[in-house]
Image (cartoon, rainbow, N blue to C red; front, side, top):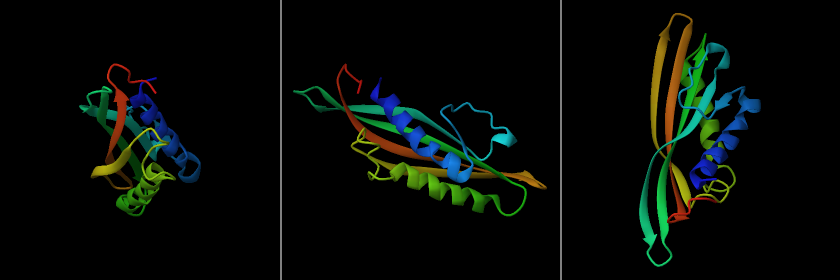
Length: 147
């Protein structure tokens, strides 16, 4: 298994724990078309990655991977931004849980690097969404990206 996949899977497991505590649907597919009955929902996936030769003698690469976490909520009353922020608190906590962003030892470090938020809707059905981008630094050997 590529270490990138293992990192994505670890993020999915961490966020999957929110299913019971927050009634969230969690998916590993960025192309998810969220239906109302599946909200709140979280999609976790990987986007661009860069690599840099770290140790020439050992042929180690430092890779910086972006893991995106999309969060969607719908509300029929109240402020959807408040509902979204409440869920984002749980998401950020889950991504850091227990190991300060090392993602079960798969990463050297990770941190939240950007957040974008959007609101939409009319009348009683309002929707809020956020995209959180985590930068994850990890190491592999050149030509051997498996864990």
